[in-house]
Amino acid sequence: MTHSSWPVLVLARDHDAAVISRALKRRRLQRLARGIYSGDIDTPADIIVRRYLWQIVDYFFPEAVVCGASAMRADPAAGGVIELCHSRRRPVVLPGITLRPQSGAARQPDDTPLHGSLWLSSPTRSLLWFFSQPVAGRDSGLLYSWWRRQEAERRELLSGLAQRAHALNQQAAVAEVTAFLRQRSGETTLPDGEGTGPSPALSVTAQLLAIELIAQGGATQSELTARLGMAKSTVSTGLQELQRHSSIVATAGARGRGASVYQLARQAGWVLGADIGNSQALFIARSLDGRQLALRQFTNGASAQLIIAAADAIAALRQELSAFGPLLAVTVALPKPVRPDVPLSGRDGPSQAGLSPDAILARLPLPDGVHPLVENNVNCAVVAEVNHGIGRGLQDVAFLQIGERIGCGIIAGGALIHGARGCAGEIADLPFPWSEREKPGELLLEQHLAQRGFLDSFNAQRPPGAPAVRSLEALLERAARGEPVAQQAAQHYGEQIGFLALGLVAILDPAMIILGGSVGSNRLIVAAARRTVAAISPYTTVAASQFGHLATAEGAAQLALEAAQRKLLGKAVRPRQGDAV
Image 1 (tube, rainbow, N blue to C red):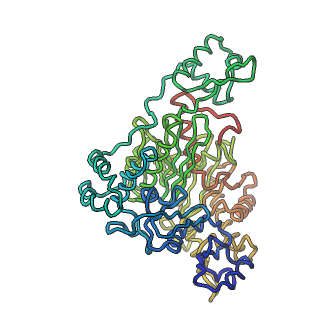
Image 2 (cartoon, rainbow, N blue to C red; image 1 turned 90 degrees about the vertical axis):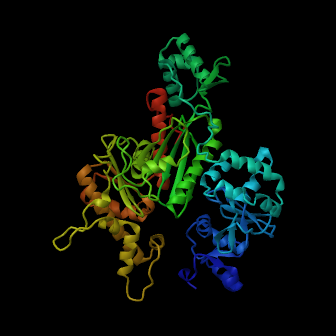
Image 3 (cartoon, rainbow, N blue to C red; image 1 turned 180 degrees about the vertical axis):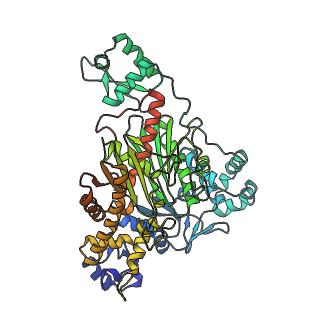
C-alpha cells in the first residue's frame, strides 16, 4: 500500500492485523491508541485525535453518556479529560486527551444525542451531578458558565426532577438543585469573585516606582532611590502607598544588610487578549509586568457555539486567575474591519453568527468598569511582531496573512494604521484580475490566493486521471518531501503571494513584510515569496511570523497590557528583556 491509500483514521477491526503491522514498520501508519491508527503520518497525533475525537470515543465507548464536568463544558475535552458513563472500567489514554469511564446510569430519556451512539447529559442530569459533589470540590465558575448556555425554562428543569434523581440515584441533591433554579431564574451577571473594582489612583511618585519595578525588576529602597534620583523619604512614602494598594510586596533579600527587595505583587492585576475567529478562539492572559499566566485554545465549527465557548473560557479564566487580582483590561480581536474610535458595526455589518462586534461583546462576562478594546485580528498580529517578534524595533512593517482568508496589518511610522473606516489592510478588496481581457470581480483576489481557491485551481489543472488533492496541507507536505509537481505548485503559490507583497511595497515601502496565517508562514511559501520580492525590491525583508498561530492573541494581549498600564501608571512599560513574552 502507498501512504495515500490509508485513510486518516484507521480502525484495527476493519483490517488484517498483519497488514497493519507491515504498514507501521514501513511508516505508512502512525499509532494513535490501541486499535486506532492514522494514515496521516506527518500531522501530530494530538491534532488528529481532536479532529476525529467523537468517532474515536464512539469506537471505545459505544452508547456512552458524556457526563460530569465534561458535560457542563462548552467543549467537553477542554480539561484534557472526557468523563463518560459506561460499563467499561479501564480509561483510554489518547495523545492530549484521556477518556475516563465512571459508574453511572445509562442513557436517560432526556439526554441529548451527541455523535453516533454517544449521548450528552441533559441539563437536569448535569445539575443533579453537580450538587451531588462535595461542597469543597464544586467549581462555581463551571456551574455559572454552563447555566448561561441553557435554554431550558426553569419550570421545565423542575418538572420531573424527583423522578430523574431517583433514576440516577442522586435524590440527596434535589433540594439544592431546586433552590439553585429558584434563585437563579433570570440571573444574567457574573459574581465578581476576583475583587474587581476601580483601579487605584496612584500618586506620581508611586507611578514612577511601579514603572521602575516593572521595567527593571525587583529592587531595594536604596537602589530605587539611586535610580530615580529621589529623596529616601519620598521613595519610602511611595512604596508604602503601593503596598497599601497591594500593588507591590517586600521580600527579605540578600543584598545589603538583609534589605527588603520590592517587586510587583502577584495580585496587582492581569489583562486578557482574546482572538475570536470564525472557527477557533485563543486566549492569552498576562500579569501587569507581562508574564504569561494562561493560554487557552479551542475550535468549534459553528460561530454561535464558538462565541458561547469564548464566554465560558473568560468566565473560567476569571475564576482561575482570581489570585492575581482584578482583570484590568481586555482586547478582543475579530476577523473584520473595526476601529476603536467609531461604532463597532464594522464595514460589513454582522458576520460571526449574525452578530455585530457590539453584540459579541455583550455576550462576554466581563467585570463592571472594564470596557474592552476591539481590534482587527491581523492588526493585532502586526502589533505582536513589531513589539516582541521578528519585526521588533522597526517602524514600518506590513503583516500579510494568507490562510482561509487574506488580510494585512500595517504599522507605518510606528503607528497602527486603521484608515477612515477601519478598512486599511483589507487587501481582499483589491481589483483582480485586471487586464485588457478580464474584468475584476468582488473578492476574486481572495478567491485566488486563499488556500481553498488555490487548491481548487491546482486540482483543475491536474493531468487527466490524477487524483485530486484534498487539502493544501497535504500538498505542501508533499512539496517538503521533494515531490516535483508539489514543489512546483508551492513555488507558484509563493510567487503569487510575492506579487501581492510587491504591491504593498510600492504603496507602503515597509522595511519588512511578515508572512503569517496557516499558509503564509509555510517555509516553502515564504522562500518563494522572498525570491519574488527580492528580484524587484532587494531592500525589503520578507520573513515568516515569529509567533505563528499565536500572533493575533499575543498582539491582543499586548494591546490590553498597554491599556492597563497607561490607565494605572500613565504610560506603557516594556518589561525587562527576558521577563515577559
